[in-house]
Every structure is written in structure tokens, then in C-alpha cells.
Image (cartoon, rainbow, N blue to C red; front, top):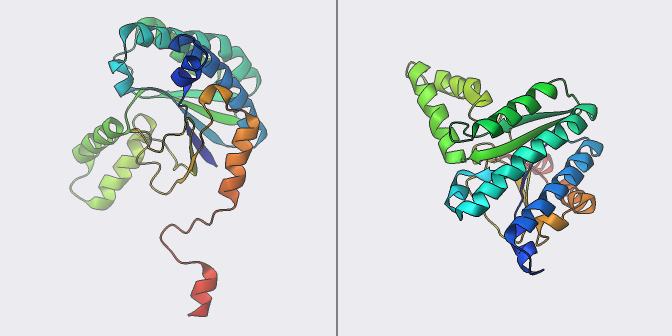
Length: 233
């Protein structure tokens, strides 16, 4: 299954403790390792984490710089662990606005973990679902020949660079907010949504298992009726 997480609440976690917001982001990075390990143990095939959105550029410059430095440092320090754990790392989102140092860290991590087969970890950096869909549509229109079927096929072909290659089964958002925030809008067309008040730095394996248990109790019909209802007709 494909699980996606909007990791929300780092700033509030820090504020409640009288700490700077950057301290919350540091603790949030530690939560990432816990959840990646828990996801691998839970046999989740793909885990997509929302690390930095296109809108996050609008935050105070100091916080943006600290976030990007933390992302680079995390990629560098976790590459070896991911490779040993057979976790393949892919970064989605724009790359034209990232610093050369961060780009090198991304490319190094992707290269060193390319053989990972246990978990596909996708990290969204400078990501906007609306931008991704627009880019895919532009590319699709250029090669679709006006046919809807060809257009949709083209949309699938450009997924590697613009959209996910598979739909999201479960979307989790921590921090108590209940919105998608321009995250995986195309892929979440039929996703089950799970919201928790737990702030991201406090989210752990138990929290993930609670979300998975809630998901297991749901019935996904994709617009159809249950088979029992079909039989009753």
C-alpha cells in the first residue's frame, strides 16, 4: 500500500516548550526515522512524506534556510542507514530552486539507495500538487494528439518526474489540521484520510499503527456499491 503523511506540528511542538521553531524541525527529523522504520516493518510498499512545500518559501528566511540545511544534513546522514535497510529514496518536487549543495545530497542519496527493495521512500521537497499536475498536463498536451486516451497515457508516462506512479491508499495528517495543503491531489483522488491531533515530533510507531488499524476497518468502494448490496438487487 501507499501511505502519505503531511508532517504538521513542528512549530507548535517547539512553541509549547518555549523553544525556537527550528528545534521543532530537528525533533521532527527524528520522527521521520522512527516512521520510516515502522513503515518498513509494517510492509508498507511506498511512503511519501511532505517535507517542504512550494508555499513554505513564504516563511521567514531564517526558518527556510534552517529547514533546507536540516533536509540536506538528514539526507547525508541517513543515506547509509537507508541503503543498509533496503529503503529506496526518491525526492519529488521542483529542483530548479534548490541550492547546489542540497541537489548534490539528493542525487547522492537517490544513487546510493537505488537498489532498495523493502520500502520506497518518497520525500516531497519544494513540492506543489497543482504545479505537478500543470507540468504533466502541459507535457501531455504536447504529445497527446488530441485523444483523451492518449492524453491520459501521457499523464502516466510523465508521472516519474511530475506525479506519483501509484495512487495513495492512506493519507495521514498530524497536528490537528484537516486539509490537504496542495499535497498529492491527483494521487489522493480515492485515498482514505486520517487526521490526528498528535504533533509530528511526537508521532511514533503506535500512532502509525493506529492509523493503519483505522484504515483496515474502512470499506473502499471507488464509487461502486458493496457486493452484498449488488446481490440484494
